[in-house]
Length: 189
Image (cartoon, rainbow, N blue to C red; front, top):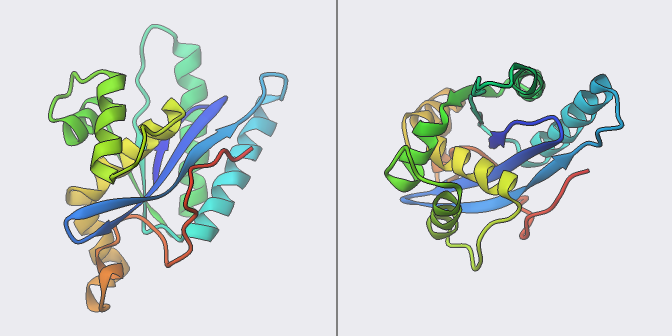
């Protein structure tokens, strides 16, 4: 399960690794309104992620690390949303992994300097989607899931879950589900 953290728009993406390919199972955005007090926004994010985790049963949560730019206030809000996502995972015994934006771009596009449009196109290509994934936050979350599912994070998640001892494609699942996929991206709200 990949997360693109944000308090107003938190992107999520669920992928399954099947051998040498990845399949998108779900993706969307948890939206909260600016009129909501911060504690209610975080509560809504926590509840929505909890429902997604109960549905998909991910083996790992991969999250984009908070980038501290010039706007420290925005970075703190994104950090709070990241913390709530990690809490939801920890409450369910799901391991958490964090990746820099550059590492995610490198894993998806082969360049840490790739632009948003290039990442979006590559996410669609790597997951075999018939059209580009939207909205942007969902596409970014799917990129985080691809980053984790394609590397060391996948091997760790499989080892920790004991899935290596199971037969079939489920043993290769990096980050989700036991046969309960939704077929189209959706918006949780």
